[in-house]
Amino acid sequence: MVSTILKLITGGLEAFWGIPILGGAIIFSMAWAPLGIMFVLHIITLIFSIMEKRSFHGSVLGIITSCLGWIPFLGMALHIITAILLLIDGFRSSFK
Image (cartoon, rainbow, N blue to C red; front, side):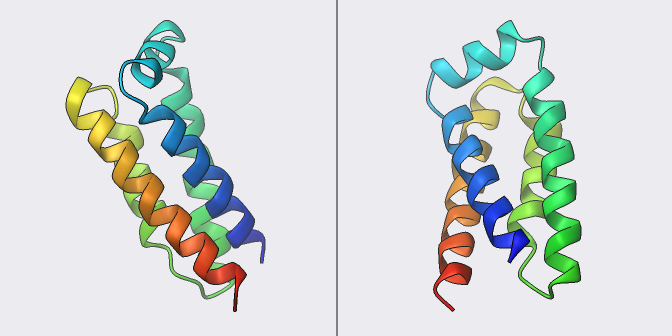
């Protein structure tokens, strides 16, 4: 169930980064460090998801989002889509 907790955490963080203007401004002001941190968190979530035989599509999309998140409008859209996917998957896993 570690993967479920990690999906909820990374999904919440992705939702925060997807907030128009605010998320991008914070990422930019921190020299894109949050994208690197999210990249690592998504890899950890992916590993736990595979070990627990859970869905890992959100983590893969999160890795892609971390790589492309520096592109202004594309990054925002990817953060929002990734957040939705991770949170749905996390909540679905928590009720099983």
